[in-house]
Image (cartoon, rainbow, N blue to C red; front, top):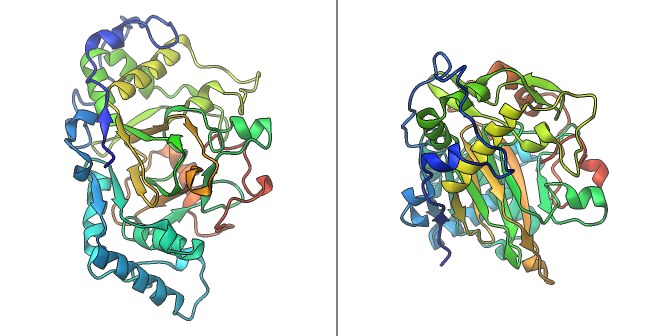
Length: 385
């Protein structure tokens, strides 16, 4: 049985010492206090460490045999309705789950306002056609959050995360690389979900960390880093150039949204030379986030059929490197979506609103590709993830 593991709880020393890139972290004597309005401690259920959980049952909803039969019945019911099979038409009414549904509705409160993440386990991908497995995924997630967001300018609703070495650009892109990636948030979406259709032969764990915990550690030990993160001068280059904060505190909630590729560039997304670069102090803050996140992370050994749901506003995620095998069942294949609940969705800070509007506005293209498509359907340069 897979188990969850975590790094040690971080102490003050690793934060105040040398960062992962050798940059010495120095206290900012000019601004030793927290920004106005920011709390000294968040201290909610969202402030957890990997060691907070004794085992995976604490964050996993297991589907039993009766509920698997219920899922098949819901697939048949939806396919029997006199409508086309557009993904947006899958909802709690068209996909009835009398027993599993109430459990998922309860789970959504935990994802939006509790620990901020969950795994739904017990679906066997081999038991369904690709079309029906996608319906199961859409049906289950409709109980968590009913609004589904575009993930790029072409309107792709389902993004397939698979290894691809067909070109240097693809092989170095987060979506298609086999390398490990650092902690980050997606550009938009209150909730990010992914269905694991198959796992790699080795590696590829899902690794998450709490932004609330990161904040609490920094607030107690390096409040100057909090001030740096809350400033509006971070020069994000992707998906467009924009100066904004990394963290926000509004409605008594902390929101973190960033990616190192958008700030520093990488092999697939080199930073344009005409744009300003992050300051030494900002790089220090990014390294502090990564240091604390890795020390307090939760590793989840994913199984085929797992559905992960994470609160993208408060949970950082990354991936370890992986190696695919020769068979289809040993090739890592995730299907990712971005979600929002009209009932439980958080208020989005102004600097992030444009990305949310582009993802969730009613008008615009929407494409529901059941399999990975050619590159012109999935533009790589604009979106690092």
